[in-house]
Length: 407
Image (cartoon, rainbow, N blue to C red; front, top):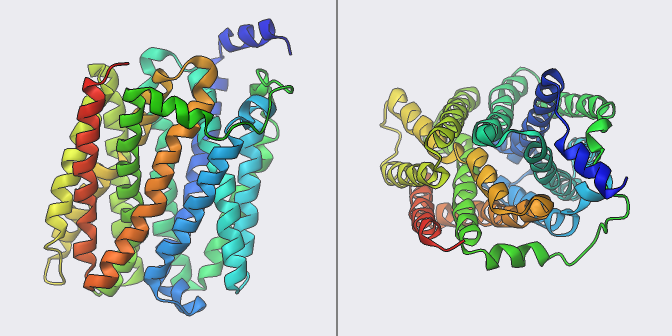
């Protein structure tokens, strides 16, 4: 495809039905990818028993997934230009599906291999999603559309947190993984018929390039650098909440697996509401950084309140705390990615997003490890959840720096 035809394709109007179907597909990819990432944390007590390890060790598995997501972002961030974003999303979801099949094999070696494939597959999905949405979404609706699409992440967590424990209690936890695997491959089949969205791909574009070129761009742009530091904090807090809520409620507060999963689902539902409201508010105010700053303040408060969590708390108060944590830690990705896209030149949206997401993946990888270390040293999940407040404070400082930084 010539350069002129790619430009005309980028400017071509998108029929409304086709556009909404595109957003639905992108949302489904985010939802199912996240469900795959979070299904083991949602089943941590029973999965840990099956593998003969403490349930808190599931955090280490999640950090391994995040490590390979980072590798994927470093080396495959240009895949959307070479193959087209739909092909990249399809390939990523195939790897996610294969990883779920490997989880069904009762072996630690297969679990490690599954974690690696899951990270590599899911790592390419987000930059490809951003490529398509930045290309076709009107700028005045950018925050809201990104936030709508990003609701797929908490929806995926709800799918795992509410559905997987119920299936595990009724039969076996492996059936929950098998059903999710089947749905993932169904989406792969749907995406195979949507490759017309790849009409701006460039088969001559280099697939592998300097993996740190995009990182250099992030560090040169002071606003993007500080925004990415805040992304580290948001992502770390969100995935500490998603990884450890169920096991904390079961082990420290004595809740049943299904009841703990429902509270995690409540937190994710609050996150969806927050994500949509934050996207609408950022578009209305024209100030994404101000909305993100409000979320870091909420994280700071929730982290402080979590320090007092114990088995004497009434169920309603526990539910309110985790719903508040969900709203504070899950509302950020849509407006964050839209702001990153604004700060990147059009030709560098995919690579720039990949580089910025390296920071968020570092948060996903390191924060659960820090959480597990705090819990192991103190014996308290309540103190470990205080980490969310620490991340909120760091994110607040970073966002203030981003506001006052030069472009």
